[in-house]
Amino acid sequence: MKRTIYIKFILAYLTFGLLSFLLIAVIASRMTLNDLIRDNANTLFRETNLISTKYAESFYSESLSTEEVSEQLEAIDTFTSSIIWIINKDGELLYNSRESDQEGDHITIEDFDPTDTGSKNYMTGDFYGYFDEEMLSVFSPINSDFRIMGYVVIHTPMSDIIKRRDDVLSIFYISLAIMFAFSLIILFVFTFTVFIPIKRISIATKEYAAGNLDYKLEVKARDEIGEMADSLNYMAERLQMTEDDQKKFIANVSHDFRSPLTSIRGYLEAMVDGTIPEELHEKYIKIVLNETDRLTKLTNSLLTLNNLSTKGMMLDRSDFDINKVIKRTAETFEGICKEKKIRFKLVLTGTDMFVYADLGKIQQVLYNLIDNAIKFSDQNSTIKVETTEKNETVFVSVKDNGIGIPGENIKHIFDRFYKSDSSRGKDKRGTGLGLSIVKEIITAHEENINVISTEGVGSEFIFTLPKAKNIED
Image 1 (cartoon, rainbow, N blue to C red):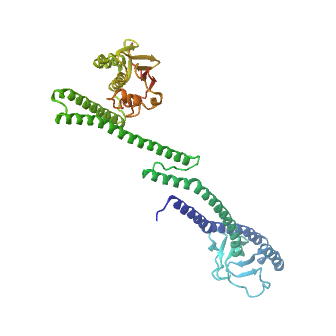
Image 2 (cartoon, rainbow, N blue to C red; image 1 turned 30 degrees about the vertical axis):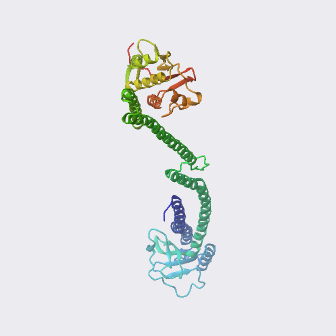
Image 3 (cartoon, helix red, strand yellow; image 1 turned 180 degrees about the vertical axis):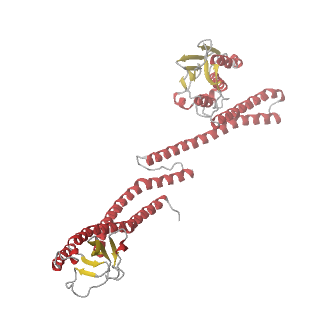
């Protein structure tokens, strides 16, 4: 049978109750009885000591009559409810407070040895077989002329002491029962505030592991368990979003691969079966090459993005001049800018502007942003690239005068494979990954990137970089 944590808790609870009972029944019982025996022995020893010093010596001297001593001892017997003996060294019983006739034959206690008490002044038992029940016997020697003449022995039934022990234990048992009852309330509260929520969390984790991310975990606690439940619900929501993103990712990849592959296959089949005449082959081969370039770019972007995600973006930071990097990146677009009659306006602060970042990845950021600006800019327009400095931060801006981004699309532009309807109509060659790569790189640098865009007016992307610290002016 599977043992849940709740069953273990119940077993621990019952074990605790059983051990508590055994502790009282065995250890506490013995300790209580021993304490009561010592207390009674000490009390009776004071009486035996009084008797031995004031009265018992009269049996060996003539200071008091035997009748007077007997009267005093019988009074003490009545007061203490104990049997009082006077016994000599040989074990001969000289006086018994419970015998009215002390003149008859004296009884001798066989094997009597007062040293049997050891370091104590009392013993328990039947007193060498004389009594039919267990007794507590307390000794006190009788001294006369610096010699021990005999002993005063007071006997009291152990049954009285045991009864007192049982009365004390009954209080312990009642206290234990009350404590156990209160602990049942604690167990009841634990069941509803801890075990049931944990059980629900366990069920929820199994549902999530089975792929049922729509399962809703209902836990209303405001403690750590409630926080755990909220975290699991949040995790499920994020996993659901990830699953949706994955489906969207696969759909976008399939779409972006299928389109150029379909075009390539169609053109090649047309050239093979003669639908496209031979004199036009060169034209359509160039189209096929353009489509293969598109597939290559898409594949490279996917590999880049995958490496950025799986490797945690390993950065090779160094100090470099961002103004110089901007100039070189803009020069790589000279050919396409001539075709579209697009001009660059570089507004760069200072002769040089050193930043501390990964040179290669920042080059890729600039390339993607400028490439994106060119795609969505009209002919005879201007792309402005600007650097500014504030405190220890450098701001880099790439601004175009293109079609702009609709307001409802701005929050999605950094999502992977996201393309607005306007972007799909304006540019057929985009992969939808350029801005995602830009976002990943800037985030890895622990910096920010923002976009300002007005539909029909243009867009401006602004990202930050830390200024280099150890560059001499």
